[in-house]
Amino acid sequence: MNILPSRSGLFDELFRDFTTPGFFIKPLHGDTLPSQIKLDVNESDSSYTVLAEVPGVAKEDIQVEIDGPQVTIKAEVKQFDSQKDERNLRSERYYGMVSRSFQLPADIDRELASAKYENGVLTLTLPKRRGGAGGTRLPVE
Image (tube, rainbow, N blue to C red; front, side, top):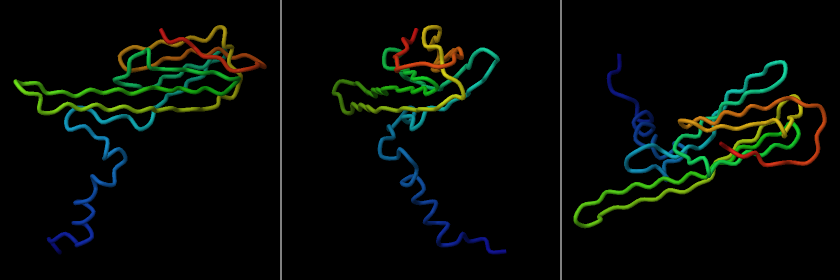
């Protein structure tokens, strides 16, 4: 029946923004920079399909590397915020790199693998293969 919040609850609420990841790189307006690439991985008899969320990144800034069953996705995030009037009072730039590596149960056939980036979602089609040697970089269309 206590209607007043506890003292620790008040401090938790007050400092919540300071303890969230990415607080110090949060833009004044617009989206925050992604801290991790979110994935969906689906398997069929012959291949894997990976959907990776990489919003706000140009396809030229995305790298996909395959080494056997190991897949690494790297993205360079560049965000420009600007307000222009008669005098430029504020201009903000944010740069960063996010990456995600994961291992699939089977080796990937790098020759038949493909990557497509559309509307902030990177779609990888990764055919299964037995064996493999050396890593390779996959071009993003």
